[in-house]
Length: 94
Picture 1: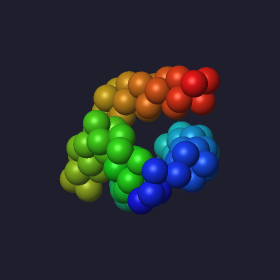
Picture 2: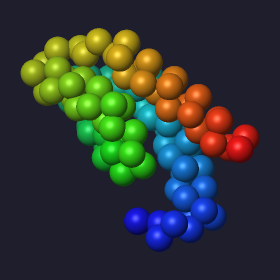
Picture 3: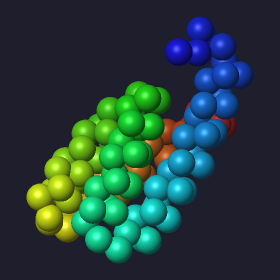
């Protein structure tokens, strides 16, 4: 909840951008399905918290795959990350 405070909204989105970078590093460092599941779960909450619901849904799907012992296909997650990053860039430049 930002109470329509544009400065607070900007700060939250900046933190989310940092979390995107941390998430990508976490994906690269995931040594097992269990570690990957934890990385996906943690970022899912952040994504949904800023309103990136398609990304949150993609992360949830990948998390369920990892929970089943599968290595999830992350193409949809990556596509959603790219779309969110592009939208954040537009917001930053407006």
